[in-house]
Length: 303
Image (cartoon, rainbow, N blue to C red):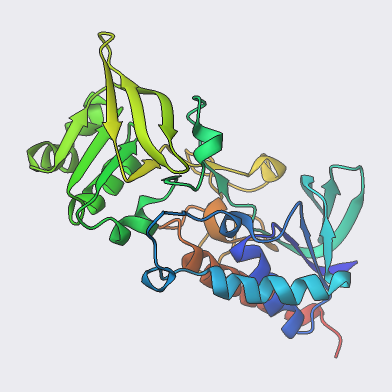
């Protein structure tokens, strides 16, 4: 039986695992890959790396350490987590079953695809899914934000403070009636294309054109130095559905100690209902979850 199983190999899961190892816990990380969303980052034709502050370098250090410690990782997706008396059963996609005294879920959240021609081709090449991370790179540039709700409006608002032009594609009428939506409607460098849909993205090595269609059939080609898809995130919580308490969007509810509604079950990173989908936030959350799990396990440990 393991002291702790960490599910997910992104920023939160990696840091949680390394901290658990340093606490001398018998820990196993289970994930289909290592690195999570840090495996994807925005590339621009004129981007100087010194202008970017991100958590990739930090995460890569933990990733490299765990790649060396083969005994502490198992590369396979998890299907189900079940609570049985005072321990957990973690069932993997291949039919395996692993038992632990505690579990940290750090499976992250996935973006919603546009599912239009050119999207996969230009992913991370002028087209990405986090304006909040890259907005400072677009001073005096033309940008496009795609999405209908609050996430898209917040991203557009941040870009509007630096970009020459921000096109908001697909915002709903309800979202535009909020104070933030009304502010964007008054901004001189923001164009709102209400209820429009993206039909295609194109470019020449990097995405530089977004084709959109309006509710009345009108078609527009938008030129952009950067395009951001900002639809609501979808948390990867299927393995704990029916076990842990989730919020209305399906994220795991956690307290300030990263504890879920189930004793011994912790969660960290984008899979939880915490604020801000950022690599460095997830790194800190993974550390906190590991320390909380250690405190939970402390009475059962043998020294």
